[in-house]
Length: 96
Image (tube, rainbow, N blue to C red; front, side):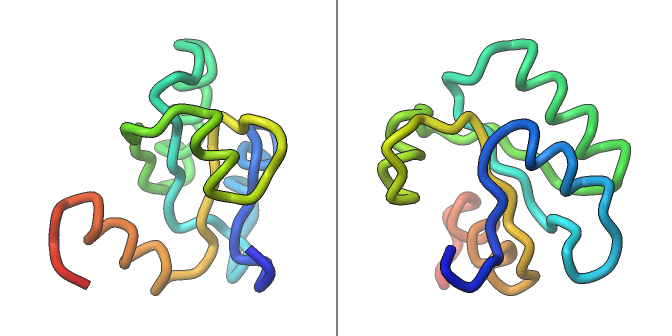
């Protein structure tokens, strides 16, 4: 997070999806506890811009805790290619 390779929160992630180049997200993670409307909005936005979006088996409060936040974000976008690939592999059960 300190490297500036994450975007946290629904609106910031939606705005980031429209960016080009090095600042465009490579992967969007959505907490399973996000509202149906939020999930639909994020998935639609990510698909439109050709970004992978995954609903993960983590609730919003746990996602916030893992990110060191005091609030419960519904989503996080990963900007870095290598970091996004490592997360994809981990979600698929592959070794890193």
